[in-house]
Image 1 (tube, protein in one colour):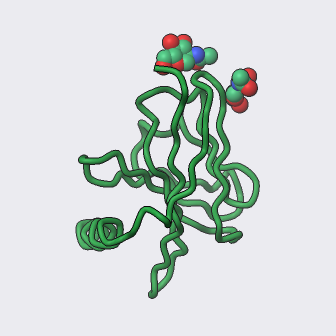
Image 2: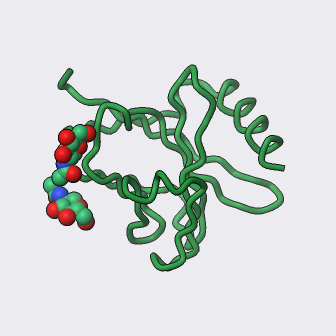
Length: 121
Ligand SMILES: *[C@@H]1O[C@H](CO)[C@@H](O)[C@H](O)[C@H]1NC(C)=O
Ligand SMILES: *[C@@H]1O[C@H](CO)[C@@H](O)[C@H](O)[C@H]1NC(C)=O
């Protein structure tokens, strides 16, 4: 099931045009908040760092105490903000990538991507 979901995500993302991206500039070392275009209580966040496969980060349920992580290693780095926003703690070069949120359900809907970049190198 997880593999199927990932395959669908790959297909989706690769067929997407670059117009479906918004850019967000970040300052390394700061906490960054990403807003999901679906203002829902429950969404799923994932990140793409090409050419690697997408990485599922967390699922929200509208309560920070309930946030579900797909990998425990993300617990320190990511947390749930208000209205399903994704908060990245102490953003580093490793965290740069394109972030998407998913509206869960039978007809999965995937948001436009938010591409993080920094002016530093
Ligand atoms: C980032 O968030 C952490 C945890 O919430 C907090 O301790 C820290 O002071 C914040 N850092 C900045 C630069 O705002
Ligand atoms: C932030 O991350 C950098 C490297 O990614 C690390 O060296 C630094 O100690 C971190 N700062 C905090 C406050 O966690």
